[in-house]
Image (cartoon, rainbow, N blue to C red; front, side, top):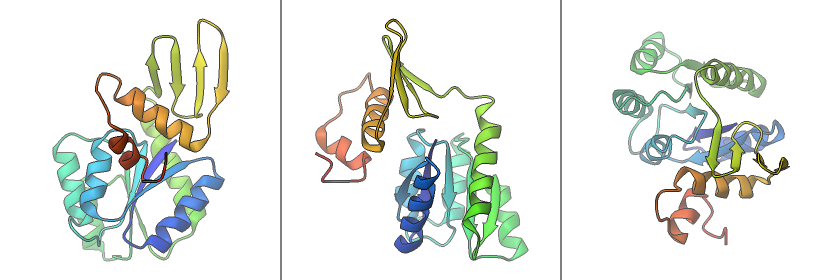
Length: 186
């Protein structure tokens, strides 16, 4: 499973990445609304955790723009904004769930798993090229014709997922490094 954390507090975002990593969930970070919108538009995420008070495009605007374009990625709002009107607005703009800060990670985890589980009934989670198949749930790569499979490291999985998602396009080293969110990847 791969999720996006759209959060401008890098301390909180890094903590969430570490916690999700312990649960075998790949988590990427977008530090502002514009970057979060761009990343979610790629279609590679199973879910997103979205703060509302973001620099650039705020969380409400991110929700409204994504849903207006038909993006159905499940989104959990994680915000300090606890007023009923804020929650209602977020749901009206397309949020799938809403959790207020402060929160317990265990509750966020079960909510993420629940919205992804509901989404997986209608989506396939395989990327393929020839005999090569990448299972996006298990980070497992397999070759049907040779009956071979192996697990990939987080970086190997991210790279192969990006390449398979863009297999009909030329991608530059810079584009790969940008998507990997680590300019020192190579």
